[in-house]
Image 1 (cartoon, rainbow, N blue to C red):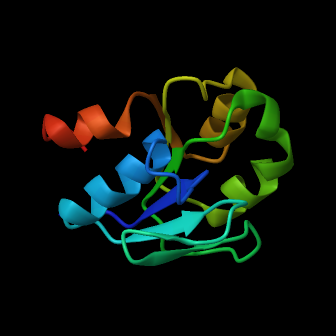
Image 2 (image 1 turned 30 degrees about the vertical axis):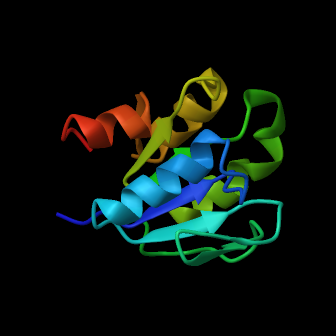
Length: 120
């Protein structure tokens, strides 16, 4: 089942995990929204700034370090995803607690691994 995924921290840099995740999600049939600070596109989808709230997101997969997440809390929570995946290096107990209080599932995992083993 396709899960529309917002890749937060999307980048056109092919050496970054967010870039790999965007491409792998599309290859596995999941529609994506790329959100980041750098201009460009990944997997044929433009990278947009964290401004427009998308109301049809199943999963937010985080590729923004913990120190840079605070200014994105409202954006993430207002998106009302079903779950947030905290990829390695993005773990954030405060954001996890806030998400759970709003009924959003949180998972400390790796999107790339989850896709590879069929656990996405």
